Length: 204
Ligand SMILES: [Cu+2]
Image (cartoon, rainbow, N blue to C red; front, side):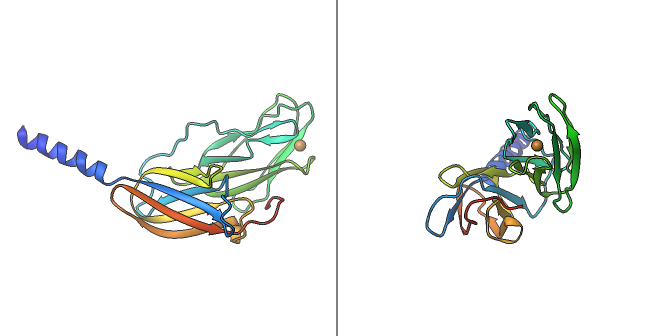
């Protein structure tokens, strides 16, 4: 009995010791913080459990805009596209691996699409050119978005893996920069990215 208890305590301590809190900061060369960059950490060992996020997998059309502008979903998620406008929309993406098209549909109707490939889906409307959104399809639970200080905290990560930073205006192939990292077994870790953004506009 005592031996079992000792093992249980050792395992528990081990578990705590092997999770670090990672802060990632994304800035431009000028030092200006980059807000709304999506940062993921993908452990080399892969995801261990089904990924779920606690926000709705939904992109509404409201006042001739998509809401939200950037949505993060796990690979395999079905995303709903409710139309809350009085006019009809025709929602599509031409992004490689995540192409879809939801032909003209009207007020209070909804359509859905299942995203089966990790990556970025740039979403537009055939009728309204100014409507743009991005769906970031991820295969890791360790994801976050930078705040207006350019920082994001990703908790409970460890070991070797890949950090990815994506932003719609990031001047890099696919709007993504990556870095191989090995995170310390415990405590806090920090990574810093200096990136270039395209002036204004949206990447498509
Ligand atoms: Cu539209």
